Amino acid sequence: YGTIDATLLFLILIGRHAAWTGRLDLFKELRSNIDAALAWMTDYGDVNGDGYLEYRRTSEQGLENQAWKDSKDAIVNVDGSLATPPIAPVEVQAYAYEAMTGMAELFRRAGERDRAERLSLDAADLRTRFNRDFWLDDKGCYALALQAGGKPAAVVSSNAGHVLWCGIADEAKARRVAECLTGESMFSGWGIRTLSANERRYNPMGYHLGTVWPHDNSLIAAGFRRYGYGQAAAQIFSGLLEAAL
Image 1 (tube, rainbow, N blue to C red):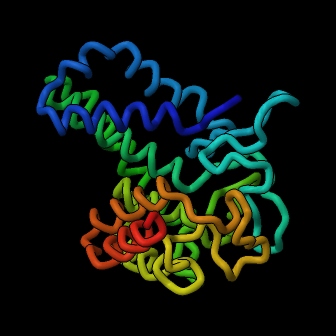
Image 2 (cartoon, rainbow, N blue to C red):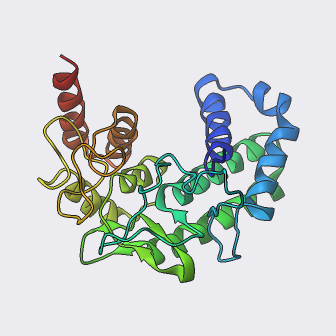
């Protein structure tokens, strides 16, 4: 078993908890865990030293894919082939950005300004590189992942919506992503598909290759709201509600 994103989501949750409650109690109580999680991001999460968090299976019994789309055939290329490890999923880099910015705010509130400034600078650097390396201008969307050699898995997928949830997308790119994800090839009427119907490996019954996931759509809707696309968020909400009914 392996997971590339649980550590980042833990940090995001700590940051959200402090924002919701206005208190730093949990931040202080779990400080050693927070420090360990931040150290993991820099010391272990970047397998090949390219500045992005990626995974590569090291056990024959382990999962080949270790982000939320963890099925064997989840991360694909335009020609239908499987991505080559190490794999840096697009949403994982967004989670890293949100984790760093959230922790920077808490360190700032705790009076540790130097630590906060370092995290803010690292987050800003990641945002710049990310919007350069993951963007697919011809498709108006972010790539599903980067694979060995920095080559993008250049397919349109729901993962790009998580990028908006975390706020790492440039404004102009966020608008194009929202348009892409609510277009006919991605929005099924019941929610946003995990993979575009225009992609070679699209399968409406495929676990991560075309099905609609409520948690996935929830994060995308929140991302649309974050960037001010309320109508697009309502479109997702209405589709999920109608599916549930």
